Length: 215
Image (cartoon, rainbow, N blue to C red):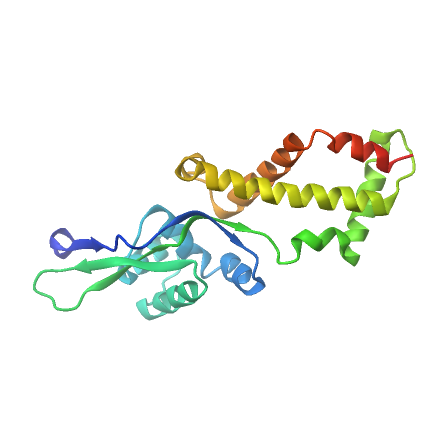
């Protein structure tokens, strides 16, 4: 009965962006943490109070967490700017109100802090070396100029990130609707593919540049 007479007073000043690009290593850990991720997943479908999240958390994960634990998870997510208070649940006859929490963005795109320099790192160089070997049949088994290949791939990746940010800004709520029903892992795969395709589409000389890496 209490839930039927309680009213939700939402804070209109709270802005929810469509996409939030996350590169901080500590925040990336929180995003993928087995305890915090279910909270983000639940808040994607519905803003909730601590009490509501406590009930839904157990239903979703099969693990019972106290309201103090749920609040601690929310505090961590709030400090990471992934979650924010978006309103109050007001119950007539009660002086205390319950804070309603929501996400700061519809989608979180995880990209490592050094992603743009990844292909120039020692690990990135090894990856490109093996990638170049795998691509040899595509380029008639020619030798590859690894430094040139590195530059081309680096430029391509940077362009993809730029195009993805442009798409997110242009589409806004339409992009949110297009990704409705997907989970965090699926969203990141979709966005990485969108980044790759956008970069290729905006750079008609990409194939030519790749060809020039092989001789």
